[in-house]
Length: 163
Image 1: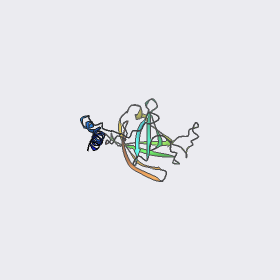
Image 2: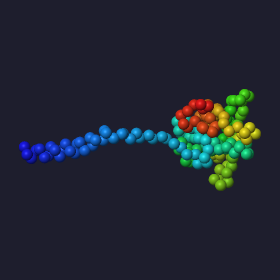
Image 3: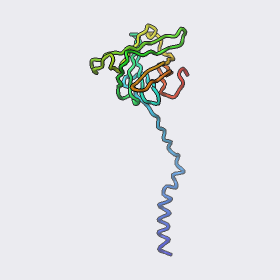
Image 4: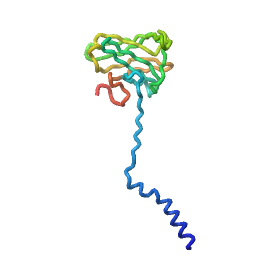
């Protein structure tokens, strides 16, 4: 019996070595899925994080640039389309932003094979916050319809646009 008791004490010591962990506050692991737009712009999620648009404002020029990017905002996704439209419904009457394909000599992108699109409007010089809807954008073999977002917040935070 003397031989069993020291072994039992050792086993209990090992098992209970973590027993005082309950007295310590449990660390809550909070993992948020964050994206960092490479141009410091506004991320707009397409689908279930499949792709993004990054919107970059140039108020002095009255211009908004859109970059089509992958789900992690790391790689540019080239599209063959010449343009796409974003609708800004308020204030009435609604306003349209027509994003035209842009060639980029540095990246070798051309109109018809580019990830960069630009829209120009006089009101973009003074309007810094608005709600918008992307009626349709096809990226690769997938179409995204009626994507609502706020500029400059985007739609990546799980909030409803305009709130």
